[in-house]
Length: 502
Image (cartoon, rainbow, N blue to C red; front, side, top):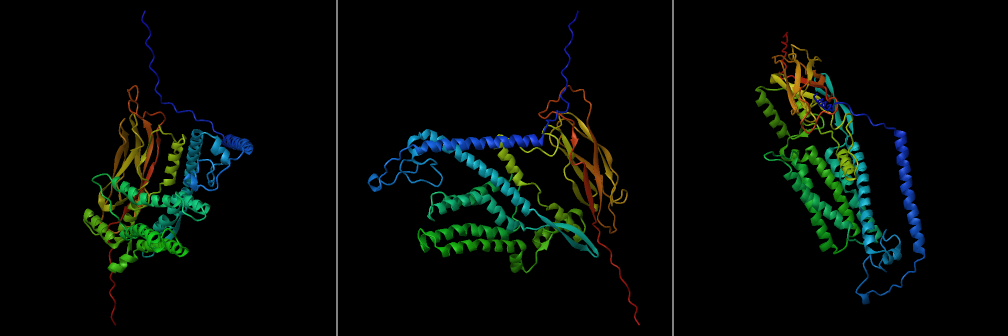
């Protein structure tokens, strides 16, 4: 008789079982762990404190000149620092240096970790404050008003004040604590930390930002007035510090010099704000800065260049409202939060997991439109809409797409498009083409939508996926609807009325 053939192993296409989670129980666990840790350290410090009381202090000389100067802070009979050693002469004299080295290093890293967590929360709060917006109604056409969301904070002012304060808070607090604890004498850490951090930002960070641009791409500074203002103050700060400490009052900073130095900060903010608003450019050229949409201030030359590029691309004169709307769409600020990225990095450093996405998992395949909104001129002819996957599917998948009417009607502003988009096992992008109808009559800007549906795995004879990201869960749709705004590119006509003469 023949041996039975082994059954093939089933494919791993089942959904993972959800992990049970009870918020109340988890909160109790965290609270119990925190209470246990605090109790452990309290008991430890009480025991060590009792042991310190039984230690007999050594006899220290009063004149250290005969011994070549006072001892270092880690040696017996040295001057006590602000926090260390916690148990005084007993710790200096009786504890081995190796044990003290390990304890001090662990405590230092623990403090750095705590500072990093606090700064992440602080920066997240600052980003939330500076990203606040308010609604403004502006008249874009005669008798028609549109609602725009405008930032409350000016980006330049926010970067120079709140964002700079949040990123520099650790070294500022270090300098304040050391100066106050040293009876207003400069110590070895505080001023050097601030000057070193500023030099690092000026030289190293600038070099990294320049070298990070991939060749042959280029970047241009849009607002040179703000750049020149901050660059001047960055270099002038070192010149002023050198003048104060070597020429004006050597090795000393008077109250008047401190007040003058502090007043330079609001002067920097005011000058940078004026440069951001275009006052210096208007003084040089006599031309007012134009705004390409609410909150997007650009120079007149930049707007003229972009307008010329668009008109050359489409071969016709375009309305100013349509150009401003398109430039505003192309220059929307990124809504991603840097604070969330820093929190994920901190979680990775401490052995935790990065914050999970709103739904799904890392292995789950997510397919959707690249952007929730698209803008196109009616003379473009065809709109290309990109559909993307978060990783290679590993198997063939497909979904349906269809255009849906809005204020723009099919047959008048666009041709109906419907079909199936199929992703191969290694494909991560696909493009859908939607024909746009061009006419010679003025029409208001209108919109319609394109919708994805019915995403599923295509039945395959392949036994197992062979790519690095197999489909472990059912695929799901990400951005399943994108709104397409069709901009008018025809100039409105002019009505002439003949006046009767009496």
